[in-house]
View 1 (spheres, rainbow, N blue to C red):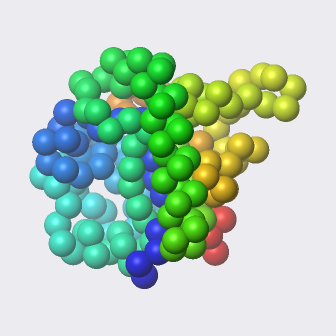
View 2 (view 1 turned 180 degrees about the vertical axis):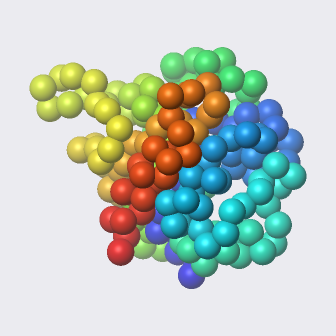
View 3 (view 1 turned 120 degrees about the vertical axis):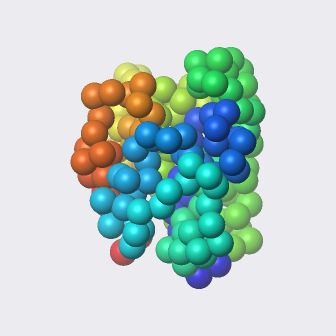
Length: 175
């Protein structure tokens, strides 16, 4: 499959991720174990040294794509300015819309991190309140949009199991 069906969006690359060129690569990040437990990947990916050709092939075959709201690598996402996140959100929406026009996908955008989503897209509920995790009313670039918890260890109350449930719910929209 060469069409991205599910686009996974991080906030921005961490320093380790930037060094090895693989998403969610920091040792101990719960993203890859949760993605596997959710049934999205047939095997556990170990991205700490980058993605192998076999990993890349498997992810492409599954229809998975990866990007970030902001391309600039930092030690912590908190180092990003709100203006930088909002600008990244605009660029992301344009990229998604363009890919949907050219290639028909992604069908679903899954943003890992509620705070970044709120900042990037000014997302509010119809009554003006803050949006939460789950399916969003606001689409990104025309794609159905889901917000899932950030898999960073800084988000300590989330577990591999709770992350997997959130990922599985977004993934199930593709079947």
